[in-house]
Image (cartoon, rainbow, N blue to C red; front, side, top):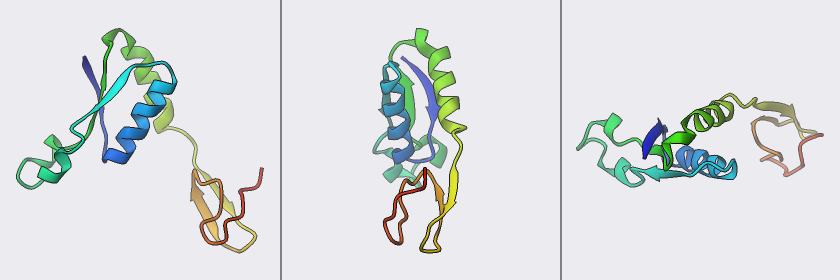
Length: 100
């Protein structure tokens, strides 16, 4: 096994692992619960980590992870006047779907 990346939080690490798995890359999440120890341990030692099961997939995994990190973020104005940013497909104020 080989460490691929550290994530800023468990939610992002879990998303990265799932997207890698969907791309056919066997990955797992380590240090899932260690965030609770931050303060007792150095914070950089408590960040969740994405690990590869097969180190031979490292180049493909790194390319996939880089693509995930650089994914463009949408910004759109809803008909209700709310400005919606990020990857949201619907408005959080009124629930309307994003325009095509």
